[in-house]
Length: 114
Ligand code: TYC
Image (cartoon, rainbow, N blue to C red):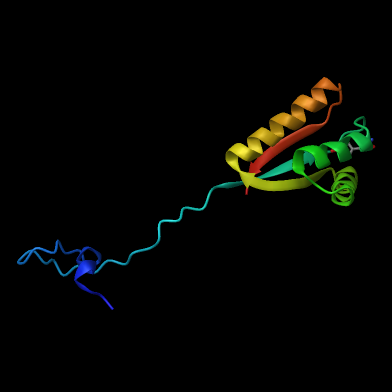
């Protein structure tokens, strides 16, 4: 039920004689963030154990989940490590690429809009 304090929701100013009678629906302004999938790509050289450690360290996966994701990537060529808002996804990709380069592994990590 609308009370006097809801004049603005009717498009009214609350001042007499200025009622427009416009009824507008209000939606709560909860913008959901654009989400990005972070993907690992397979290659022939990066050791499996290194990939598992990266998944545990950067993506906070359990040993078991990390193993499962690594094997999925190894077998299918690509796999999802997680879904995050843009800046979080970007930071994780950068961390993976940095740690791979420092250890001279060709491991590739990319992000894509969900
Ligand atoms: N294919 C690699 C090997 O046989 C292992 C590997 C898994 C590499 C996942 C990258 O994203 C990757 N040593």
